[in-house]
Image 1 (cartoon, one colour):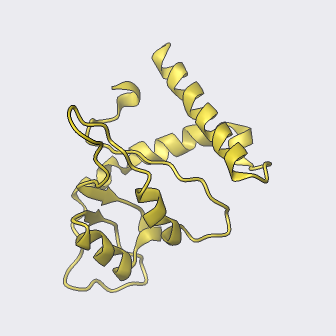
Image 2 (cartoon, rainbow, N blue to C red):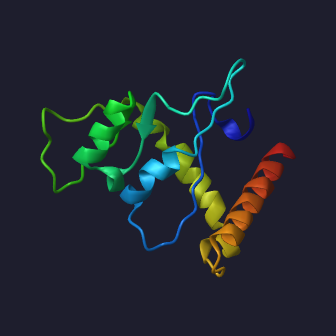
Image 3 (tube, helix red, strand yellow):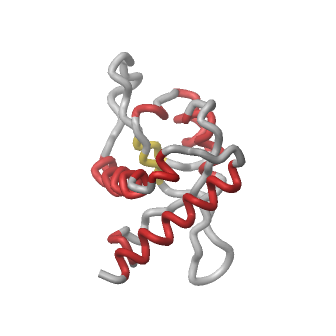
Length: 139
C-alpha cells in the first residue's frame, strides 16, 4: 500500500469553512469514510477512532460508543477523567495523520485558502494529494 499506511487505516475527507469548531465537523467527516471490501459494499464504520484533544467531549465519546466505535482520544489538560483514564493503545499511529497534514501544508494554495467556494478548495486539496502520491510512487 502506498505512503506506508497500514491496511487498517480508514480515510475520509471533509472540507468546510474555517468558522466551525472541529468537534462539530466530526460526525459529517466520519460519514465520508468508505473502505472497499473484497466482497459486498464498503465499510462505513471504523473499529476505532484516533483523534487529538480537540475532540475530547463526553457527548462525542458516547455517540461513538453507541455506533460501536472505540474512541482513542486523550483528555484535555483541564479535564478530570470519569471512570479512569481512557486507553490510548492506538494513539501512537497518530503521527501518520500529522505527517500527511504536514505534506498538505507544503502546498501554499492549500495552506492559505484563497478560494471562496469550498468545491474549488477541495479540488486543490485533492490535486495536492495526487501530487504527494506521485512523489512517493516515483521515488
